[in-house]
Image 1 (tube, rainbow, N blue to C red):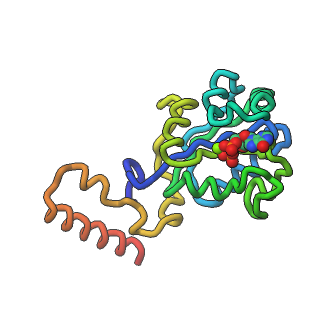
Image 2 (cartoon, rainbow, N blue to C red; image 1 turned 30 degrees about the vertical axis):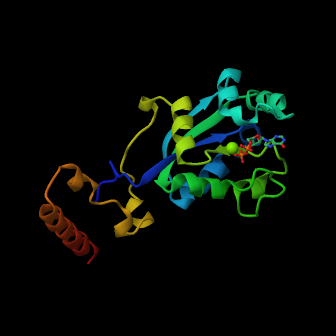
Length: 194
Ligand code: IDP
Ligand code: MG
């Protein structure tokens, strides 16, 4: 099997299952959406978010009239926090979440299917790759995240999407050696599939 570890093409994003998702017993159904899509959960925990962290997290909304209400809502009961991994995971998860306001979000999205509100919209999802990095750092310690091989990996991505050559490149081999190793790996994969 091609190793999943050290694949540079994978991205990680932060998802927060907000207090309404917890209170409305929707954690399982929302998590299933991510799992069924083929995304990988690499970190998960329950935490009651404190106002200090929330003020950082929602810094871009400090001047909004709903800011205080947002802090109260987000700190009212514990949330579930997850780090989710996959190809283009940040953008994929944003699309699965849908528009901010549940009433405007398309059917089929998490907010579109389960939310009627512009505030209680069930999940937070990092906006872009850069934001995802510092949001993950804000809420997760390195030892709270895991790299592991998942058995459905070979069926979620096609061969050329699997980042199968990463390990070879890392070892500083010549172009010829890399090409040779690539060919060998292709042959081995093909044999397995026959
Ligand atoms: P996003 O969650 O879709 O990225 P942002 O604009 O970053 O949307 O807003 C962060 C969160 O603030 C939203 O998910 C929602 O909970 C809350 N929020 C955004 N706009 C409003 C509003 O107009 N009224 C009340 N709450 C809002
Ligand atoms: Mg946002």
